[in-house]
Length: 393
Image (cartoon, rainbow, N blue to C red; front, top):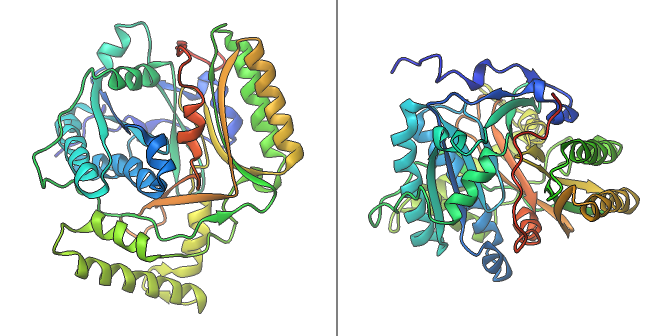
């Protein structure tokens, strides 16, 4: 299939390298009019987390990204991971493939993880008909990985409509499975080194004061940036490998249907042992360098993002956390923002690695005990506020 100029949209957006640039509208480009947003999330993720299924919730959220990118056949699409869900922007050539992928994810999550997952495909034209937009920027997380940032209010509107049942994609027939090649969770929880792992969500408030909201975001980003490595929860040398029996079972459910999982488990165990052995002995196998891979895991992680609001999971000390909370509370009192914050003692990483020989593998970071899902739960019951832009003109 020959790519059109529209299909190449994301790859042609100039990258910005300082995260503070998320509030600069000059870094954003409007999504082409013939694209659509694929969005999904777990119903009652809060209840699932309280029941001890947080790793499954996290994996299900990441599966939306994995399934859609694999179905469309491109990793170079704008997406954002939200802990218990995700949003992916797809070009017209990939919309029907993405629709089939989210339908299959719904069936897989229900049958394999006992989780109810919503899914929708929302055309951009319907978003713009509401006077909103989907603006996309490209933040360079490392030399080899970049992530999309979303502004304009359109992604939030699409998610809200999905939760109302609009634009819904029905689940696929029983036993239909998505292509989740590359999705894994082979790392131990990452303990805090500075104080607490904090998942923060800050979105525009009822005052619709874009200037005040920009000031808030810039302030929070600056406080976190003053911490060692900008509050990055993953050590520079990479996280500690960890493949538990529960994690192995979860990965087998990603890779193979019931009755065919022994081979999947054995393969995962061999890959895990080989990768760790190469890292431990500082050895290479072909183009794979075990130690370099671990450091790339850290560099390529999406621990901070902008999705019509700030989302970040950071490792900060008590003093910095107090300053962040004070700013959030001040902004909430003036109706400049709504926010949710959840503290835990560790972070969790879910990975999407299509080819370990390449260095553009992607790693989704969240808090290990509720993270974004429980931070978002604090926002429930409050009317959402959608603004056309929160970045600087």
